[in-house]
Length: 76
Ligand SMILES: [Zn+2]
Image (cartoon, rainbow, N blue to C red; front, side, top):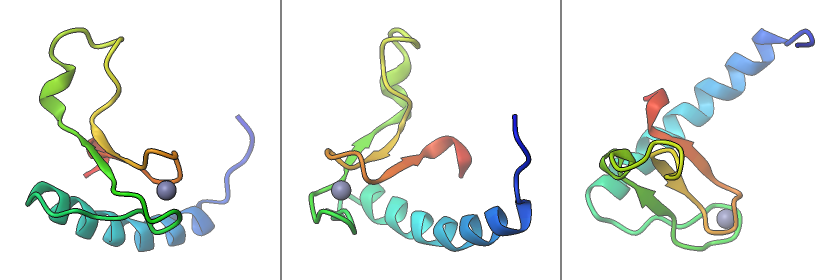
């Protein structure tokens, strides 16, 4: 692992963390949220879907079909 500039990282994380919380809230309420980058509807992968086989199923979270948005529910 190389050195990480934590001050920079924290700044970015704090801002996107609030954005992500707002997005998660909307998606959890069944509202359609579009990706900021490509305007495609984000896909919710609920935590319950990882019951069957932990390795085969993707991590629970909210994803853009094109991969530009990737929010893991674990970090909330
Ligand atoms: Zn996208």
